[in-house]
Length: 211
Length: 104
Image 1: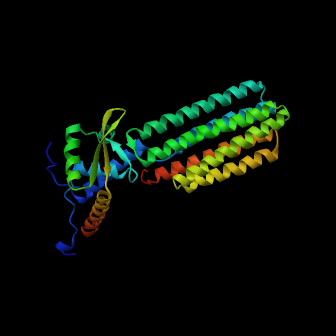
Image 2: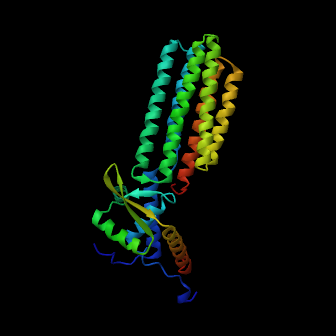
Image 3: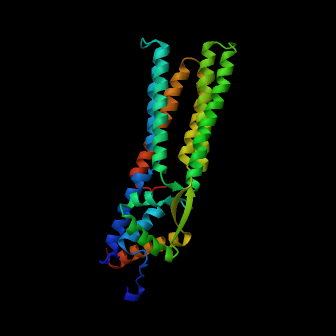
């Protein structure tokens, strides 16, 4: 193949740069906006429905709400995993290592949390209302700590802020008690994801360079 | 502004194909590498065309090409060097200066 014969003007050159930049942003992902939107949906709808069912606003059995939450969480997790793998295709080096460590961090943390909470639940020492607080509090705490960690490794203040917010929500969910803890999960947790997602979307449109 | 005050554009980067390769590589985080096929996909270039231009960038030490093995499969990994990144920054700065000088 030969070199490009026609020399480019400065303007053509800048246009070409902008064009390839856009392509890179589209392919490598401008940020976590879409993933956070998926989690916002899962938390708002899943926990929102749970709250409505435990307060008897809607007449559905508790297990249905539980299944809905599980389905939403599996879908959001599948979407997050799929898009992270898609974006990271063919990329090697520090980004990939950090991304993998973060992903495994979530898995390890979740398993640890479940072992602890299931064990405590099985002692049957707590009332079902108290068990509910245990789960919502620890789950929000883990989520908060993971976003704090994400903010640190990617030097992303917004993500760090989201982590801080989740930890505040974690404490709030325990303090407000059952069944309002589900409202905290839906509105503070899901709402936090939604707000962060919107900010990332706006930033992407503002044309910040791809990472 | 007089003619010779205008900045020169780096001929290694100032060619359509190589400029796009450089932009793509500069879009990765420093020290990250990209496999040849993914780079090809991001640029919509044929393997032969991409290799030719990568070689020219490598000759200028703007790009580092590493042949490695992953699970016994050979992979070609490409990365922009610090020098390449700096050259791209100088190049875009020069473009803006040229546009300013011509009133564009």
